[in-house]
Image (tube, rainbow, N blue to C red):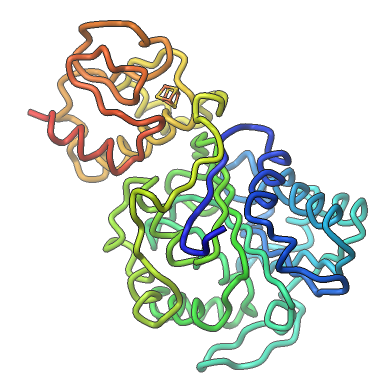
Length: 360
Ligand code: SF4
């Protein structure tokens, strides 16, 4: 797979989705027996993945299954939860301990790891010494940096003292610098139901997708488009590109869709905030891949104070196929609306642009 591309697989069978992505990208061609492989999930807090905070156990299992079928490696799952929470407890709550035992992988709490200094920052030794690093972030919102995904997930490779210092230095420059110090070989993004606003979860938004890419900067740029966020609102992305950590050159053909989003399945809207935003929609059998994009777009418009400008409810879902005459619709299924945004699914940034054109 071209390293300048990002593959996406929609659905709900997370293990199979990961297997499909890793097989498509032919990750095993980059591995050899005996390699030290590090898996870096997001266990920022000890909360279950359904909260929208942490990497799904099934995604981790998909990676472990792929590695098992591909060769004989020395695999370690490593993470350091945020200051004040216990990584060990997070391993337990998310079922990683059971999984590690089942697949013969090791668990490492990076809070207890040794470290060295690179470009002025302390970084733990284990991820730096791995032969192959697989980053497993969650696509989600963040109250300070607007979003968090590939680049910021590497903050878990720091000792706690350094995490505090990152905050004291305003996060953006340190995160961008870290992006040049530790570059994952591949990143597999949990886009199943990441949180709308907060890295600690509580407002999960079903998006039913997993992404695979090689360039953390490109992945974060892509995720911004998917969440309707302007990359200028996330300064560490532009800084990371400037520092040489990767490329922001996201184009229409950057994304390779391995399957049709109409097979992505549905999940109930899980949070109170999502339900509030859903009042602006007329939803009939919408796929989560589509509806999640719309909820992210509505949330962004709400933050901009423009949600009240919407005159019409927005039609969305397969139930609108063949229905004529509704005023406003999002997604190919609403082609019969008087005004409809094409895409299956459209991205949140495209939905925002479309809706703003139709506001009073
Ligand atoms: S356009 Fe229709 S089929 Fe495609 S993702 Fe949206 S609801 Fe599903």
